[in-house]
Length: 357
Ligand SMILES: Nc1ncnc2c1ncn2[C@@H]1O[C@H](COP(=O)(O)OP(=O)(O)OP(=O)(O)O)[C@@H](O)[C@H]1O
Ligand SMILES: [Mg+2]
Image 1: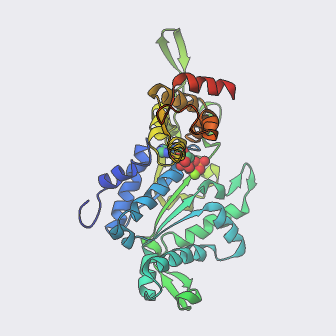
Image 2 (image 1 turned 90 degrees about the vertical axis):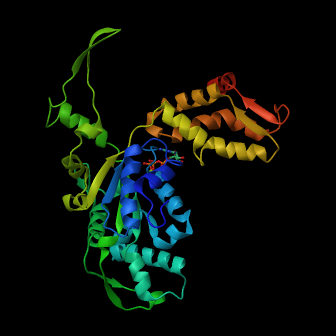
Image 3 (image 1 turned 90 degrees about the horizontal axis):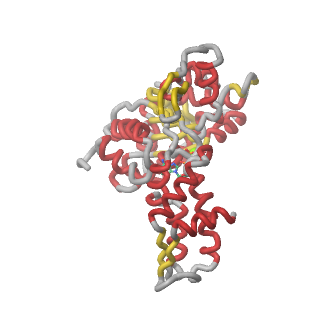
C-alpha cells in the first residue's frame, strides 16, 4: 500500500479475500473508497443482487478493510444501517439527522471524548454510510403507496449531497445548532430487489416492451431449438427501478448502479473453502477443540457446492444449509470416527448424509 492512499487495485485485492466473485461490484466499491480516502468526491454506489450473493458481505469486508490498519481507521468514520430502521425513524421525525448523529457517535468513539466539535463534524462530513436492504424503503409495493418507504427516501435525500444541512448537536457534543456540508459523505446502498428480475423479464417479453427480447434459434446436440437469453444487466433501465419504487431523485443520487452476479458452483466452492464465516470454518474450529482435524476430500467439497448451486434462491446461504446436514452428526460426536486425530469426510459420506436428511 502506498503511504497515503491505497489504490483501487489494492483495495479490491483486499476485499477479494472475503468476497468471492462479484468483481464488478468490488471494483466499483474500491474506486469509490480510494477516491474517498484521497479526500476527493466519490460517487455513491447502489448494489443490486440476489439474496445471498454477497452484498452485506461486501459491506462487512469494507469495514474489516478500514479497521485492518490504524492509519485507515483513523481516516474514516463508517456506519452501517438497515433501511428499515431509517423507515422507523422517519415515522418518529428527523430521520436524516439521526443518521448524522450515528456518524457523530461513531466519530466520538474513534477520536475520544476530548476531541473538539469541529474535528468531530469534519469526520461526519466525510463519513461513509452503508444502507443495507435499501429495497425495503420502496415507495410503492405493487400499486399501494408505502409511506414509511417514501419518508425514508425523502430523509435520505436531505442528507445526500446537501451543501448546508442544519444539524442539532446532541448534548454530549456540546449542543447547539450547526450547518453541515454533506457532499463529502459516501453512501453505499444495497438490496436484493426481489421481483425486479421477473418484472424486467416481463416488460421485455410480454409487457410494455414486448418483443424487445427475441428468442434466438440455436443448433446443438438436441437439434434446432429456440432459446431466450435474458440478463438483468443487459435489460434493466432506470425506469424499472422507478417502477420498483425508488424515486427518480433518490436514484439520481447514485452514480454507479452495480448488479451482482448469481453465484455459480465454482464461486460457491471458493466461498465454502475460503470464506472466514463459512460453515466449514466453524466446524473445523469446533472439532479442533476436541483434538480432531476435519478433512474434506475435494470431491466431497465439490458435491456440497453443487448441491448448494441447485438452490439458487438462497445464494451462498444454501452452503450452510447443505453442509449442516452433512456435519450435524459429526459435530455431535466429534471424536467418533476420527483416525489418528483426523476425521475424513468423503464424497460417499456427503451423498449418504444428504440422502438421509
Ligand atoms: N460473494 C460472496 N463471497 C463470500 N461469501 C459470500 C458471498 N456471497 C454470500 N456469501 C456468504 O453467504 C452468506 C450470505 O451472504 P450475504 O449476507 O452477503 O448476502 P446478501 O447478498 O446480503 O443477501 P440478502 O439480500 O439476503 O441480504 C454470508 O454469510 C457469506 O458468508
Ligand atoms: Mg444482506
